[in-house]
Amino acid sequence: ISIPELYRKKEIQKIVDAVNNSNVKQIIFSSFAIGWKDLVDVLKENNSNIKIKTFWHGSHSQILDEYGWKRNKEIIELHKNKKIDVLAFCKESLVDFYKNENINAHFITNKVEVPSELKVEKQKNDTLRIGLYAAGCSDWRKNAYSQIAAVSLLNNVILDVVPLDNSVRKFAKILGVQVEGESKGLSREELLKRMAQNDVNLYVTFSECAPMLPLESLEVGVPCILGNNNHYFKNSELEKLLVVNKEDNIEEIKQKIEFVILNKDKI
Image (cartoon, rainbow, N blue to C red; front, side, top):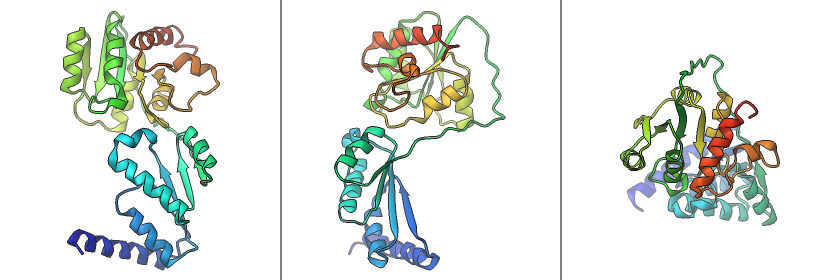
């Protein structure tokens, strides 16, 4: 047995002992990490009556994320072996799919609360401010370049970007887009204040489950445009107002920005 494996066995036993001594009836795993499969095995071996549930925040697009995809397969196999009792998802279509696969799947919705003391004084000028957040260029799913390109088609605009890296700076410079932003991480309150300063925020990603950012943006009073890969606003008027149908269509993103600005009060 390798030292890491021996260490993991000892840590697993500590957790199992703590669970047994606490008379715990159920355990919920939020996401799933390497080694938790072994923990589930031992927990069920020690107590077959304990309920084990998982909440997976990802989607099938994570097939390109080797680590996350392996964990998802572990969850499914553990459920089929009757070691995990419930699989929860925040992507509605995944729940429908897994239910059809005779898996005990449940839907969990995201909830956003913004601090009541959050105060933001918006700058009054003719410049259009657009926010692009949590859309780094290291992940194809975030679709940052198409959103930057769409902004370049507008006049008198400042694009606020967090995280602001060299890839964003270079592409924005090529297209003549004025950018501001922060390369370092921000607290949630700092990010909310930034979002609230803008006329519109963008989150037109290629893959999503239930993104928090569009909800937070709306909660601070700023419309957020997003892609059509989540259940938000399904069959509602907001779906027509905020959702882009073709995330890689730069012209459509640009038109949606203009449309949202015209309908901001309605939104």
